[in-house]
Length: 452
Image (cartoon, rainbow, N blue to C red; front, side):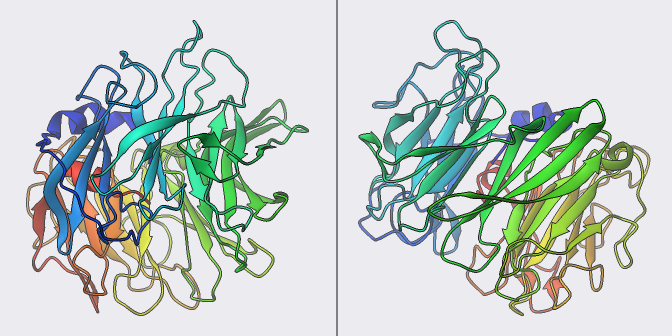
């Protein structure tokens, strides 16, 4: 999870009105990487900048029917959490869940990439908060293996997975433009495994965001690093594939955009869009073409990423036309909406001009198929779509954050969309796609808390 696009950040933060209650305990075993209390239901972790000067994390515990009423807030003043709660730390601005110590409770890696360390401004820090039957409790600092410097922003992005296939969860973190992979086990006592440095030393590539998943069908998690290339004769944004294994192996690179940098606020997702057994990468570059936006697809194979494709609002079957300021691809999410076994893709375009001005916003839902993601059968939702509550309004930023998740466990992922002026929504998934029948209002912080 990363902090949202700045254009809508202040307005959405003002819209968050969380209610804090004490967490209850449960002894059930964890099933999901974000089940922090091990009761078998996915929980929600939201960056809560207004909770304290340095930020915090709001946990909303899940139930059989979706988010419940029990919550928990953790910041750097919480018992057992390293560091101090200081203005501008941005504690919780980036998060990655995993059961790092394999105790049956999901844990949460949290960054404070604005934290000052020993006089170095915004060097940053990363902490793992430990899951338990009562929720998250205490934390362990992850050592910064990068350069100790101002603006190093340790924890600019995080990703978790079993990158070497030994059955233990590992953590990838960015620091000072390089990526570091901390091998498990990671426990309250610290990091027991070795640390690998991933950097294109022969180029000007600087890591900006991370996506973890399996693109070649083996038992190891792969890593895609999205970063900026800034050289006199080469400027743009690339996706760099790292093959998981006992030794992490540098693989192919895909150019996402040329002539300017755009690593995206939402780095991307890996999901099997064509149901061939290999994960596929989707990453949005909302600044492409004068902020028109674009989504790049990189399809997996037995050898890793292979063919690529691009989706814009000029793609056949996709509603609308590319216009400056649309921000197509500002947020993306993948899950199976109609239950056909193909992962579908939701794409936010929060800058879309519907009536009079930009930042009115909308959301596309594109279907997966044997051919991958195409415009065939795609859907478009905005405030003027019949059945969608609210009115088209400037700075609604509808679609600033989108999520696909099957919270009611009916086998169909539902579409969650943030909006400012008339609130955020859940649109149910069905066998025929997303529907406005049964649409309901949702607290914005819950959508923000759906980690992916």
